Length: 491
Ligand SMILES: Cc1cc2nc3c(=O)[nH]c(=O)nc-3n(C[C@H](O)[C@H](O)[C@H](O)COP(=O)(O)O)c2cc1C
Image 1 (tube, rainbow, N blue to C red):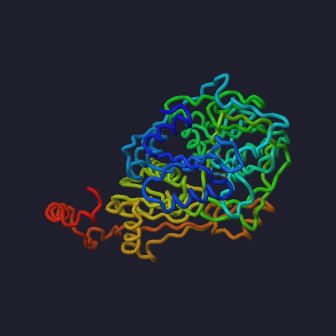
Image 2 (cartoon, rainbow, N blue to C red):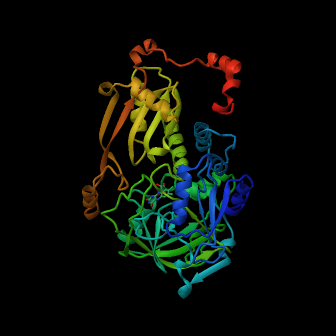
Image 3 (cartoon, rainbow, N blue to C red):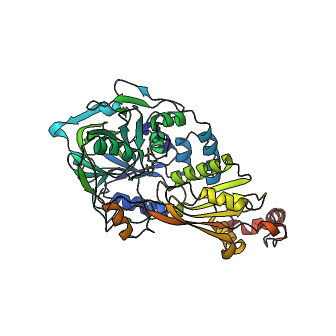
């Protein structure tokens, strides 16, 4: 495995998966350039390391696209890099995930992140090139590809979660944690119920496996530090934060230590979100927990890692989709649903809003059963489509063809009302969200399960597919393929 982010980057630079770029501004330019490249570029897009950022010292860098290619993601998860296709990555991550043994972190006295420590009047968040990502954003975001570290005062459990962090001024930050998040529940316990300050540390530029872990919904009480150690096969090295003593990643690029005080909220947002909308515009800015910064630690020439949400597909879609798909597959099998041939959550729909499961039909009602179970496994969901096992669930062409030809809306679509959702859901009106903000109330949206399998009762009589057979295809390619070489993909 790799020691830290820098070691990881050096491995990828050798394979051409890192590109250094000079002179691009952190005010809309770097996020925009990255978005254009990620959306319109061909092939695996390299991660971009921006340096010589106007108005910042040379060496103060930002990094976009950390886990945005299948090979970078495979390496982060310790999977074989031969795993070219998305489905094979899902399969191998599922196997690793279900056998993963958490490994507690190793406590060290100090680490590279302590190269510079700013306290008191030296604290100034504006010395880092925190980007303004989108044109309608309400501020600069220093935390998008990072971990927010909070400790449960009762059990000592340390939670690390990715919750976006906006710069308020030179010494304050605002934290956006939605109601169901562990960080939010801990904040509520300390600041609201017990009226005591909550120590917090924000680590930027951590080991990629720790960043991956910090966006996984682990059970309450399981630390992302242990989970990342399990992924890496080596413990994460942590050291006590010099000011507040929370365990912080010793090899991170930047760590900010601070405190949230009871009742202290600051306006946050709006911010362009991962489903492709400013889904809180009109409600934003929203008062969110404020972090009063007590210390800033950073390495020489620090790298500020960034994740850029936008209209999908965006740069961290792949990692979320592989994780969701593996979890759904695992839960379906553990629930006893047989014949699961593949699961894919389409990046184009963001999160888990368009999930496809392919199954080998063994009994009547199995497709509906698989769809109904899978439809409930994400906080925000929309469409779950179940297809036969001759359909590649990761191919939108295959899926749309099956949907259009094998389903019949009257018998195939099940609509589930009053399912959970979050404030990031653009299908919920600003009016409903506003009500929720004024007096905490649940938010709901509906979900649909679409059975696009051949109808079980007459599946064996279903019309044969009109497509050249594999056998004939191979014969024809062998005989005539040389005439069309320039039009055919490489074998
Ligand atoms: C790039 C990225 C940004 C995220 N931003 C937020 C956010 O601003 N607020 C939030 O509540 N969850 C956010 N999430 C989702 C959480 O990280 C995820 O639900 C995680 O499981 C939360 O950790 P917890 O389960 O320990 O609370 C984000 C995830 C990613 C990958």
